[in-house]
Length: 249
Image (tube, rainbow, N blue to C red; front, side, top):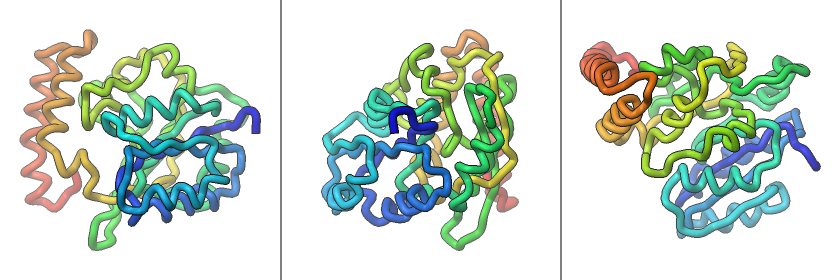
């Protein structure tokens, strides 16, 4: 396929226990105009063997040490050919085989920069917490309100506004979104498209994530350190309240 509609990028490191299900959800899609790219950080647990078994389904892959997930994403983006780019975690999965078909039916022949949808965070006990709002720069400037896994980004955005900043370990995707102009063309499809395993790095290292997002907002000219501090404190008090009430936050 000379020009796939979407490049699906997966960064992996010792993900043998979850990657098979992620790949199966891609291969099961009824929409076939995709390409799949995997950037592996030099896994030693059998991930590399799993990738090699699926090599015929991959447009590009590599396995070598990298500087983390965002470095891996950047390296994969350099090889992507799709009109859009989307990022899956190795423990994520498309919710149903018709997800991509429904997203591109909604896009139709129109041109957008960001396409968002709904995701579900799967807890260890099997419960679901669905989340993901439409793109709204004023709301994203306060906190991450969209479901980033599975969101479609027009590939040219990375040419115009640069790659992910690998100085951030957890929130470089958020920093990239704040670099975008508020006038980008967006489409929200209110459909549950992606299943996300709870326990990802942003939830395991919550304090690091909060500090990174403060730094990102403080350095953003449209937000600044004062508003960033207010947003930081606003998020801080919500975490224990949500824990007491049993609400995902």
